[in-house]
Length: 394
Image (tube, rainbow, N blue to C red; front, side, top):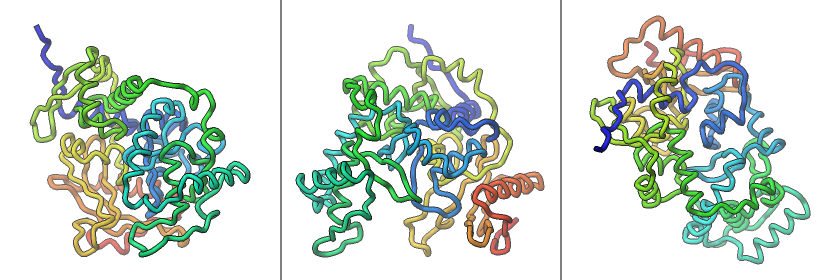
């Protein structure tokens, strides 16, 4: 007789997910940065710095002893992470490099088909770039001066930039370090430890490793959840993998809408349920690119919180704002806030605050928010929090 799926109520599902992604404990204590990034699986990189860039904010949200220079030190000096593309540019634990080789092949094939990459340097031109890097050491795009030919379209890039991107996607070049947010490229053999670069993991083992690592960090998930986690395995491969596994546990997850949906969980799901702590009652601002926010479908299912990043939405059409931070209190999203740091003036400016429906904005919540804003201000070197420009303060 087939065993009935394990039913996981919504509150427990939220507890599991926040615990797996490092948002259940109070974000204090000793910081083990490699272990934290390994727990998350990856950290998305982003250029935008409204308060702090996404990758720094994501790490700080989980341990407020984190400081912005630490990530580059881990990459450039300790080689604890490498940069590549999940659903977007990210840092990934270095030990995961062998299971990432299929992603180099996938993206190399894709890049060759992208219309906006057709103007890159040919093989001789790319070899000349590698020869310069070999002789001079890590170089950024600023070391080259090729120009865009013809009409300058919105996403047009110089031929050398396209070539550097292509070789980075293909794994021929790796990010050596960053200065500010400027990426420096080096030959992969000078960045990736030999034992990881030379390890030949068969493709089916890479698929298995990627899917297991994703499900481990999700605690439970549909095939779609598993595929979206890394975006390094196509949907048919993930579905086939799910069907082939005999050690996964069928579960039913209760959504915030009280609808039960089928999913899969690791073999130790019952132990995880027992061990996962309740989320801290601290109120915190999450980054728009936080891994708990990134998968909008999962976010909506579990928390009933609908969120959209409106960076690319014309200002007149935005519902909320350019860069709006979800507010998480315990295991519940209670609002969203728009803040902007003025680092030169030493201020964190609060621009807008919106409260979720059915949330009572009590004095205790106000105190929690103000305390977290003060902590965020200290993180970016601001002396005070300015509410003067906030037009909808409760």
